[in-house]
Image (cartoon, rainbow, N blue to C red; front, side):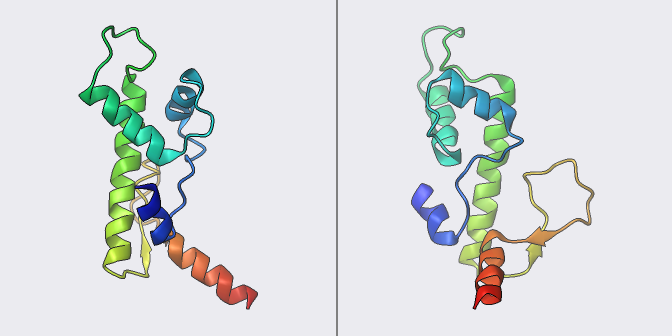
Length: 118
């Protein structure tokens, strides 16, 4: 997933407002983990659960929600990249925004910055 996201020009860093996943990263002592590692860590913890629910590996409900939200965003932007979409979109990362708010796709931002610097 990391390589696919990098190919698509999508950042792999964990969004700054994802407090539950950030706390999980700290709780597990994995400060270097980015979004894809956290998504797959939660997936693996659900498929191969620890013996006790009190184990730090067991995901909390807020971690599950943030991992779901991040992974669906990854899927959406990868599909848009594969289909060659270059316009604006409504990001799934911010559920508090209003319906009409759009933003450029990550690779469109990079292309605009590169064109401005040329």
